[in-house]
Amino acid sequence: MKVGILGSGIVGQTLGSGFLKYGHQVKIGTGNPNKLNDWLDKAGTNASAGSFADAASFGEIIVLAVKGTAAVNVLEKADSKNLVDKTIIDATNPIAEIAPVNGVLQFFTNQNSSLMEELQKKHPQTNFVKAFSCVGSALMVNPDFGGIKPTMFIAGNNDDSKLQVKGILNTFGWEIEDMGKAEAARAIEPLCILWCIPGFRENRWMHAFKLLKNN
Ligand SMILES: NC(=O)c1ccc[n+]([C@@H]2O[C@H](COP(=O)([O-])OP(=O)(O)OC[C@H]3O[C@@H](n4cnc5c(N)ncnc54)[C@H](OP(=O)(O)O)[C@@H]3O)[C@@H](O)[C@H]2O)c1
Image (cartoon, rainbow, N blue to C red; front, side, top):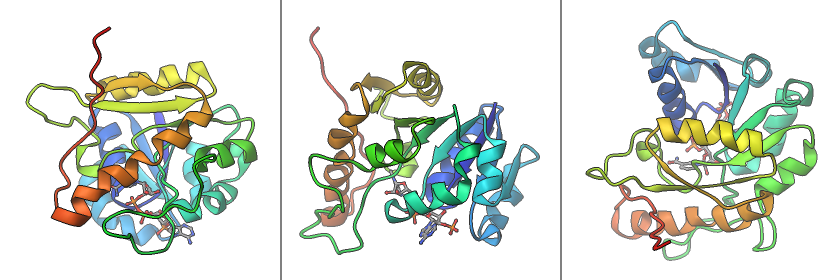
């Protein structure tokens, strides 16, 4: 599969390396290709870098991994014609550019909205699936909790796209909870706030969520 990753930060690079590990081709899109020189040196021949539009046009499937405040703008740069009928795995969180309060991040969305819904409305011919947003980058690919699979919460309007993302999450070692349509991103995105609190307060960053069920 050809994977186009919009975002050159730790999430873009980590997921990029994860897709490469499982034999896919990866192009990371960025406004600053030089940032990726070290990653490219280690990533091998299936990896490349380009503009946001280059990565979007390359990808049969797209990963969105940019700063939440830049997501709308980056998708414009990627060019909506490169996104039509494609799945976008949306790892972003709507973190506001304001300091956390006692370890609690602040969002620029409210509880009855989400960043993914806003992106989905702007790109109705593209299928957004929220995933990877509620865990730190170090645990995104093959997280090791001594044989216990953590839960990745996903949501999105298109079932075929969610099936595609479920396959990827299975390969990356996750148990999956499909929370339904795009509105469920209103509940999934804030898990990032909860996930970050032990990090900001106690410098603990190596945890993940698990949904316990008795049915
Ligand atoms: N870090 C984590 O562990 C983690 C975990 C879960 C979810 N997330 C979410 O994943 C996303 C990516 O996080 P990250 O930590 O990898 O890096 P980040 O610093 O949040 O984002 C880096 C990316 O955002 C782009 N960007 C930043 N400001 C921009 C602007 N004004 N205009 C255009 N592009 C801009 C950068 O562009 P260039 O490539 O041009 O520099 C780069 O590609 C975020 O939404 C974050 O909340 C992060």
